[in-house]
Length: 145
Image (cartoon, rainbow, N blue to C red; front, side, top):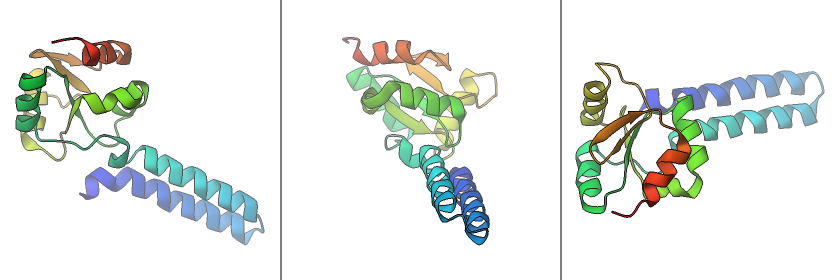
């Protein structure tokens, strides 16, 4: 749990320190603006920015039934965040597996990437694609099965 929220908590703590420093120097507006900016960064890098994750086995079962891609990700990953933001509302159409929460998901990613936990790893029709272009992933999510 701590590892998943670590980066977000660090942003909040740093924002609090910056805001306290600004406030002590008499800069109320700067303190509020700095705190708001850091809290927004914490939200973007938190697990809350992603659709609710499922386990790898459940994602594989669902993908076999509906043909939608599986995305293996982890909190704090800049490339995962880029994929999530570029997918927009289409992200809800995919099956997301948090590899820090699911050991089977982490094992699947290591098996696909030569022992490395490289994310995002997207599985489409049984084939793994490491850090694919978001436009391609969006097209795969809408492809008829």
